[in-house]
Image (cartoon, rainbow, N blue to C red; front, side, top):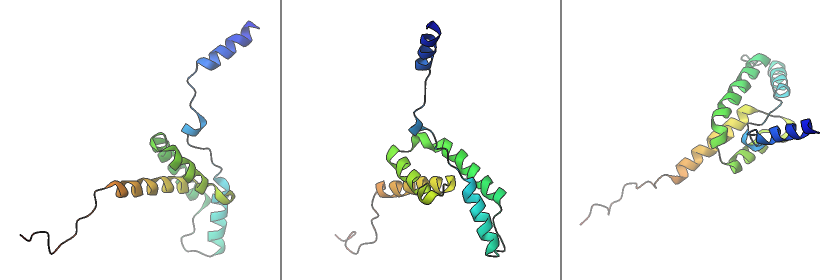
Length: 123
């Protein structure tokens, strides 16, 4: 009984990271398999191989790890939904969505442009 209580106490004392604060675990192998097969079937000169696709996905996952916690939860949730819709999951799509949303937010908050005006310098 003491061992169980000790285990529960230890579990409660650890600093656990909420699931939403971690980059989601996506199953990208299916995407890379499908992409590679489709590219080959289409006879593309620069068909993406499975290994190249996986390299891109792992790189995107690593980049996400650096921006995930500073991304607003609403943006994370929306982008995660887009990156996993239709059963295909992609870290590249998730990262791109977050980057585009961040860029759009930055542009929207910038001061408005003041184009040329015939009347601005008149006295």
